[in-house]
Amino acid sequence: MAFDLDEIFIKDLDISFAFEIGMRTILMFAFVLLLLRLSGKKGVRQLSIFEVAIIIALGSAAGDPMFDKESAILPSLLVFGFILLFYRIITYIASKSEKFESVLEGNAIYIIEDGMFTLHKGEHTFAKDEFFAEMRVQGIEHTGQVKTAILETNGQISFFFYEDDDVKPGLPVLPKPYSKKSREITEPGLYACTSCAHVQQLKAPGDCDRCNEDEWVKSEDSKRIR
Ligand SMILES: [Zn+2]
Image (cartoon, rainbow, N blue to C red; front, side):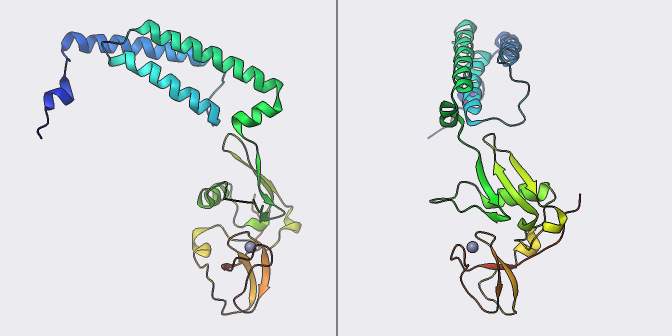
């Protein structure tokens, strides 16, 4: 099997088509900007699932006419128009119906309640290492500092903290202390369950009173430094 490098890298490209590509790209870029302004979104710090779907559809319609000789610009603009119309209709319905909105974008989910992971039935709804990273970004050392954490539908996490006097022992989320997790308990002390962040006194290996898992890390109780 031989590769035709001309076919792969160049095909119909010549100087005049290169200029055409430049013009097509500038035009499509301008139309994309215009469409995003018309969508009414102020910025894209975090996108909901629905918005990501819109962006993917938009990207495909915008990209082809930039370089594909066979693609004219007007059909792409029609796609833009329909996407915008669709977006406006859907967001309007979502603003009127909470039920529809939760089908479209999902619901906010409790991740931490009273300093412990909320026990969700069935599979995990979030990746723990990502969540730990998010906690560290917020300057949180262990779960005992957090009264409540909520995963918002746009992927951001809202944290609500205990007052200093109410901070309790919790599961450390910094990599070094967390990496000492083990099923072997050699010295008695307060241990945090790596699965649900419940803290209990242990003298020997044992199951978590709350979730029945058996992997532990020595708990921490440092206050939050603001
Ligand atoms: Zn547990």
